[in-house]
Length: 332
Image (cartoon, rainbow, N blue to C red; front, side):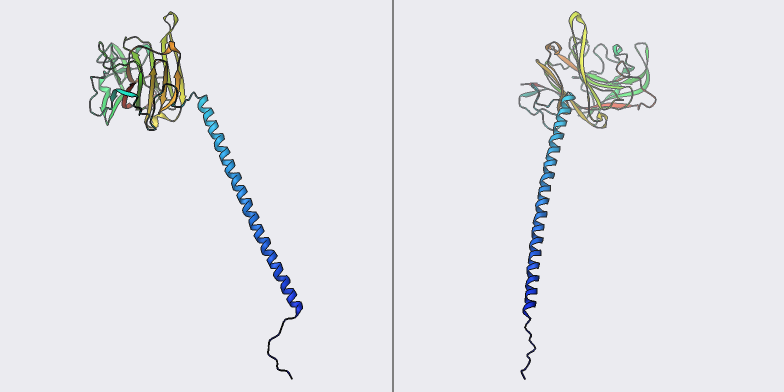
């Protein structure tokens, strides 16, 4: 009888079954691979669509921002005639400019060679009755400390020129009764300031002519303490019949009382361009509105007056209008 070795060859039918299973598994693997490739392709297509959508949204947003800037009167710092500005604080970097005036308020006393603490017609106390303001400006309310010029408004009853005032405040100007301590004709003027918030406050930085006339007047900036997001820019001039005329704009931005901001003016023979934080926001090119005579600088913190309302019991006193520096350049 034959000896059994214990090894059994599979039947041909089983081989066919195994071969069929192998082919099926290979088909499944091929199908799975194809499915994975298809999924990857779909993901790539979706990724490309997402990128295109994001790019489209960015372009739309940029267009909307440009349109809004145009609607708000904003112009880039490349406005014709404007200075070359650095990204920081708007300081001029071009060699085409030379420094005329630079007060960093680094000491402890106001430089009397440059500044006075009243309008030109007074020395020890004054106000602006033409605006029906409620403060009496006092030298004691003008202090230089912590590297800044501080003009402080106080709820402090006082009698000035025989009239009772409920408030004192501070101002500084570069002109005296008979002398011009600093004046210029054409150039770029800039200051960096911290303005107070509160109903009744009216801080301003502006220019008047050395003729001691009330016009022309250029308001580099002025604000109202109860409207901390709005900056006003104006120019005043004499028209036909010696009538005083004015033009100006309000520009809305961040809460300007929340931190330091720069305000500048490029005054040239053919234009006036106002800057806020280094960006041109308004421009005047009408020759009849552009001053052509030397002008001096004024910084003041008014209380009440025609342009605002009186303080309320909630208005914070004392409050300070601080100037970090005042600089003037002229084209070389």
